[in-house]
Length: 81
Image 1: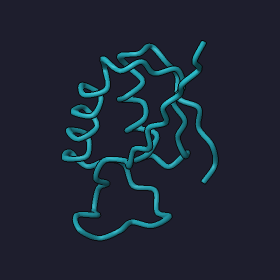
Image 2 (image 1 turned 180 degrees about the vertical axis):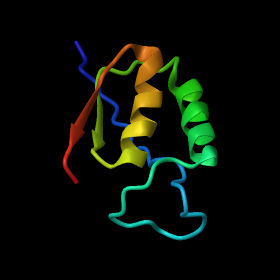
Image 3 (image 1 turned 90 degrees about the vertical axis):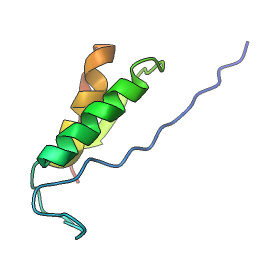
Image 4 (image 1 turned 30 degrees about the vertical axis):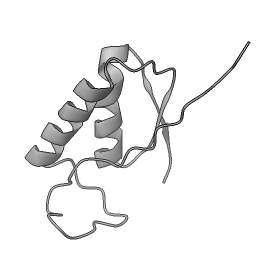
């Protein structure tokens, strides 16, 4: 019996005020574009078997993870950055 596992590493959507600039350790929320990106990612991964979703506690990362978790009925495990 095979226990193959796949790990997906996903970067958060665009954050408010970032545009083409890295935000670093700041904690802005997702921009309107970032929310659209998270929704598209959620749609893309909705048919993929997902058993666990982990995120940093930064707003932009957690909000992206929550969007991906929603169609799977999963909660997001958040860890301090």
